Structure formats: structure tokens, C-alpha cells
Image (cartoon, rainbow over all chains, first blue to last red):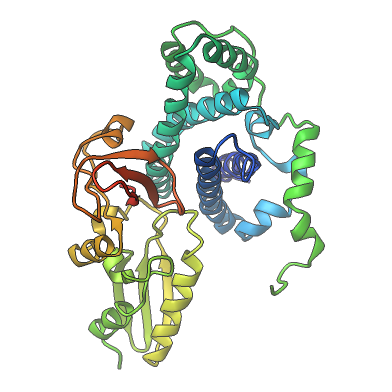
Length: 223
Length: 162
């Protein structure tokens, strides 16, 4: 498998798995606007995953659906940050903000790539992600405005920080640290990143649910 | 023999699946049409990438072209070639009449929340007031936000700028 395909699958798996996690708020978010927001963000992320899988599928002679649903859990390249099941609001917001911040840095580097197909797709994805970032930043403002919000955000960010570093390659991590530190007005823990390819039970549970329909009916079934 | 003009005319009859007041051509998603014998090639750009209407747009185009006695080859462009700036002037007016505020033009710089929260000329599609504020960045479909008009006290759907 080429480095390019490997990269496409990492990006696509991040977006698919995070989209799935975000969709877990559908119907049960703390209030209606957030129910709509997280459902919409989930829809966008899964749309990005589809486009990225299509580029990878063209190289592999496969299809987007096969790449999304027919691999074994250990073959997913998603970063551990997106795999965590965090149905608690401060952690959900912290994960959302950390991921969107890391993703902006990653997309900026992809947009500057010599690979025009990948650069063009990254530019299109980034236009949608701008709304996700604004949504995340709005929540950071809100949490930083009160003592309790600040304390809960700080605790969640510190817990998730090693996972956030793991979204990016080594070379892009200092920028994430600088941006996150500037926004929070404090330093982030000096820790080792949790790298890609580390899968816990949470991914397996997610995979079982996510692929259950696909596995229950043979490929090519008509609905 | 099918002509390029006949293909554009046929595509202009296809309504957007989610907002049927506007056609695919007015939406600006058809980027190019070429014809060779009875094969029609259509270059098409998705709007929002998670839009579930994409497949239905593709099928509608294939069926229209089949109606002209030709076969369609739909080439989906996964690049940054579609913007809400590509919605035609007629399309924008139709959206407004149907109660959807058309998208603001793309900004040169980075899109910031402050641009959307207040002012900046977001106009209520019902009463025309610009005293409107952002209620939710996200709405009933990926392409829309929810705003509220402080003059006629109506929430309304605002097309996002992409």
C-alpha cells in the first residue's frame, strides 16, 4: 500500500469514527441546538470520510463502503482521540475543540501539498470544517467565562491531551501545543502522544455497532 | 444528435431535491457539459460533502439525459470548485422568495464567528430587516444555519457561505 493510500485511510478513518461518535449525541444532547449541531457535524464528517475513501478506493480497486465497513477493527488507522466514547459534555467539547484545532493544522499542510487531487479535496473539506471550528470556539469562550466551566474544561483537556497529540505527525505537534496553549492561556502537559494504531475495546464496540447492518446483509443487497 | 445547449436546458429542469424552488443549474453544481456522439459528459461538484441528495441528483441527471436519447457520464469533482458564490442571481432570488436567506459572498479572509453573530448585512427573507442574529450555526440540513429576525420576530434559515 502506498504512503498516499495510508494517509487517505488515516484521514478517512478519523472522520468516520469521529462522525460516528458525534452522532451518539443525536436525540440526547443537553439542548436542541446542540442536538442539531452535533448531528450536522457528524453528517459532514462522514461525508468527508466518504470522499477520502473514494480516493483511496480508486487506488486500491475497492469501494468507499468496503473500506468503511468491511475491514477488521485492527485495520482502522484512526487516532485514539476519536475512538474514545465520551458521553460527558465537558469531555465532548474538549475532544471536539482539540480535534478541530489539530485538523485545521493538518488540512493546512494538505492544502499546500503537491498532490493536486488531495490539496483540492482538503480545501473543500476545510470550508466545511470552518463551521465546526467556529462552533467549538464558541464553546471554549463559554466555558472559559466561568470558574466551573474553566475547571471542567481544563480537566478534560489535560486528560485528552496525549490523545490530541496523536492525531498529528511529530512535525505538526508543536503547532498544536502552541495554539492550544495560547487559547487556554496556560501550558499543556509534557507527555508522550498516544499514537495511531493503538486500539482499545471502545473501538471494537463502535465497530460492532457501525458495521452491524452491513454484516447482517450481503454486499449488494437492495433496500 | 444531442447538442450541448439541449443538455443545459434539460439539466435546468431538474429541481434541487431538498429545495425544489431552485434548479441544479441555478445552484451552480453543473460545471461543464460536453457531447461526443450520443455520450454526454457532465462535470458535477457536490455542495456539502455529506449531502444525502447527491445520489438523487446524479440519478435525476442520468434520467434526463436518457430522455434525450443519450447516455450520461457523470464526473464528480472532489475539489474546491464549488462555492455558494456559484448560485446564480435568479437562484438567489428564488431562494429568498421561498424563505431561505441566500448566502453572503465568500470573504477573502478567514471566516470568523463574529461575522455571523450580528450585522454584516444578513437580511431577513420575510421583512428585509438586517437586524438579525445567529441562533445556531447548524440547521435542518448541512447547508443552512438558523437566524432570528429582531424586527418581525421570525426565525429563518440562512444559507451558509461555502
